[in-house]
Amino acid sequence: MDKKITIKDVAKQAGVSIATVSYVVNNRTDQRISDETRKKVLQIVNLLDYKPNSLAKSLSTSKTYNIALYMMPETSLLKRSEQLLLIEVLSEVSSHYEYHLIIQDNKKFSQLNNVDAILCFDGTFDFFSHISDKNFVPVIAIDCLVNIPWFFQVCTDYTNLKKTADKHFGVNQYTYLCLTPNNERLKSMICQTFQNVKFVGDFHEVLENSNQKYIYNQISLKPLLEGKENTYYIPCNLHSKMDRVYHCIDLAIKRTPDMEHLHFV
Image 1 (cartoon, helix red, strand yellow):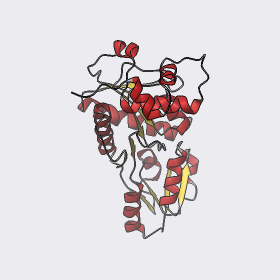
Image 2: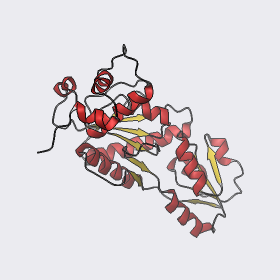
Image 3: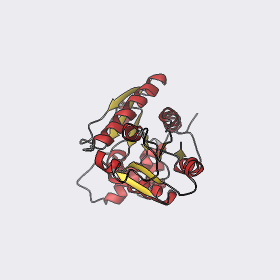
């Protein structure tokens, strides 16, 4: 029988007192606790799956089969199109795994007690932190790199994408065209992978300098570039990517030990 996680375990892992853990999980505002300490305690609570008595009473021990999805508000039609495509594929894959996908209000961050896990797509670190700091269920990052090793993260395999592009056009003889990520760590990784990168946000930016050699993998760009000379579309298998997301959800819910929390698909 698995050992029940206690408040003492959380305090030991976080390096704080039991009282501090109690203040944090009970959202006591009358105590002076730094944001850094508060965040660390909540992250350890999430990692160890610690449930305070009051929360345990309100949560069912059985799965809800609900998955929440947060996405940042977008003004770019191309980025909104990419979000809608993700929702479509994720809904299909969720149904396959017998889960119900719930799209959350991206302007309200509250504790969710009726879901098994939360997904965050293409968010800034602050956006992700607002979500993870308020919840006790696993939070999975999709195309959203966070420098916190115990959160599962599923990201496009840009190294493999570059190998395919190099084989088609020649090593670094092209520009990788993609929608501008909200996540700065992801943006940095893309720039480190490809020698030439062009980030775009709207239609006219896509069509500028169309005589260059471009490779791209986002479906929302396909109607603008398909059939154009010197462009090469490398399909991104969103279904495989979302399958990996649900694999991570299963590991996170079961708190299964896993050496690798960053998955590239």
